[in-house]
Amino acid sequence: MKPPSPRPVLVTGGAGYVGCVLVRKLLEAGYPVTVYDLMLFGDAGLPTHAALRVVKGDIRDLPTLAAAVRGAHSVIHLACISNDPSFELDPVLGKSINYDSFEPLVRTCKAGGVRRFIYASTSSVYGVSDAPDVTEEHPLVPLTDYNKYKGLCEPILLRYQSPDFTTVILRPATVCGPSPRMRFDLTVNILTNHAVNRRVITVFGGTQRRPNIHIEDIAELYVKLLEYPDGLIAGETFNAGYQNHTVGELAHLVRQVVEQEMPQPAPIQIQTSPTDDLRSYHVSSRKIAERLGYVPARTIEDAVRDLCRAFTAGRFPDSLTDERYFNVKAVKRMTPTLLMEPVGS
Image (cartoon, rainbow, N blue to C red):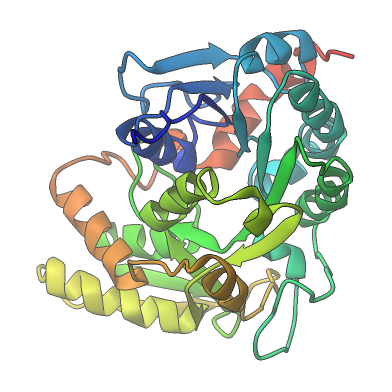
């Protein structure tokens, strides 16, 4: 018996750092894909494909969203003002996109016939914890508004869980590795960029514990979440991490791999500076391994190697200065436009 064809998927934020990698994997798996994105960074990272539709739209614009979501079986919600510095540029704007728009978006998707909704939360909702393994039941103690509002969306989504609307929440670790829409404002990517292009790694703090996951692994996980039976994931929350290291350990790991991949010029130095970023937690991904059988296939070392090879191939020119690689710079440039975007009701 021939298996059913993959059903249409809408990806909000599909032109972003993770979205660009995810969209390729969805297309390779045979899914018709609609990308719904504000295009703060353009759409150059997206492939040209007969099964791909790209809609430039604001998730606060409900009529445009409703039209885009029509016919979609599943939604993967990645869109947000991402990372603390970008959110803090304009907290009112950040709240309007990351939190105020969330329930109207979920309601619009459910009313539009969507059957599965996957929400990308964040492991940073845990804030600071001394627990040896932070599980999904751990209290959420966010340190910033960005983390707080990502977490506050979770119970909203779960209220919409029903037999005809499967909801699942993913709390990903910090993502690392190359993407067609590259970010050099994420820990491992920052350290690798500086190691390659400055031959000096600056560590801010160093004792904070952080989980990380390779971008290819997290993208593959989103595809898998489209395929699991409803009963395995309905109303569930899953951590999605892999290796947990202190920031100082990450710096030494990055130096080792970069010196192997790019041995010239001189050895890479590591310098330490103080920081006010106190987020520290050791995330357990046991639940997703036991319930879904999911274990990442790649390591942080693989991400650093992949980045080194991308640098060698010339994929990221001006990586220390070009604003397209840094979310906060692009959001700052676009804030007046974002404030004027139409908000549906």
